[in-house]
Length: 208
Length: 106
Image 1 (cartoon, rainbow over the protein chains, first blue to last red):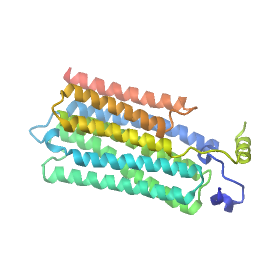
Image 2: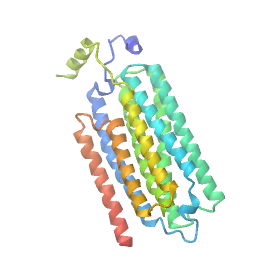
Image 3: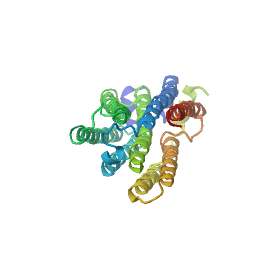
Image 4: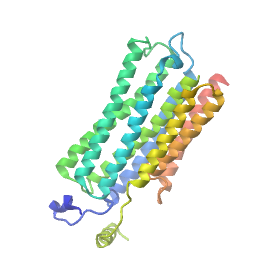
């Protein structure tokens, strides 16, 4: 065990390397504070969307626009990616760097799959359904809320991508472990936000 | 116990056990089932809209408990401060939603 760390010659990596240093623990705590702030940010976007979701200005309505199979596929992809990032953290705790990197790569690939679906969806709305950013209050609120979430996914994909590079270069240490752990928290939080988006935007839109 | 002492302790304790994937796979299956119920409630149609919305909200809240409790470890010990942070965030978010809706429509 912990053969990944022996090249440092400082003995073994602790069992929970992300919480082994004060800096690591502080990072995790501070990240929770950040996620509390993110909840407020998305809360205000949800408030705007819920307020304006029926103001369609004679443009397409939610029930006309949305396709449940695409939403279901996007939801499934994001749920699976949350599971793979849990597996990445379990590999981290067992100090299996290769396994950790593989799970992170799968997570990033699923993130790209989600983004691809979303780009396809937005493209269809804009070009087929004439549902642009300025079509109606509903369309503006929709693109702002869902687009903000998409931007978070895009940022997460880049962030985890960079961390994979750091893992290759520096290996798993008490410095890199907290970064991986915090990025996994971020990824789960994005999944939680998506739970509300598919419920409030897509499913509620279909109900009316 | 200082961090160094803790680390030494952990080094000695070589037979330390790590949690397996089973618990997380169960949580994953549970969240897939919650998602399916939500989609089915809407896809089936013919159900009273108010009842459908209730089902959707219950599924979403349960889903958040599964994801934040199990996958973000909020149910584990020593997470009181993170829980306070998150509840604070959700409280402000909920206030914003209720305020915006009531100002405009109620």
